Length: 107
Image (cartoon, rainbow, N blue to C red; front, side):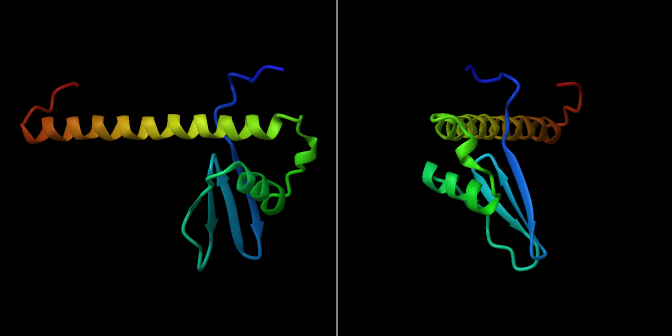
């Protein structure tokens, strides 16, 4: 089985007792009053635990290498997002520099 080129992100959300737990790629967030700081998921064991216990995803439905593939793809997507954020920050700084210099024409 090959990986789909259309799958570029992993997002899960689940409401629990007035809070919402959200997993975006490899970061777990808790939204609501008294929420904890975002938790980066650093290893495949914690990733599987969060999916199974926080989001009730039946991991036994995955193929034998499915969990590892999901972990890998979430990491690849996270690196891509981080790269895009760095690039957009560099672009923003370049535009700000041009504005300070008085150059407001097209980039």
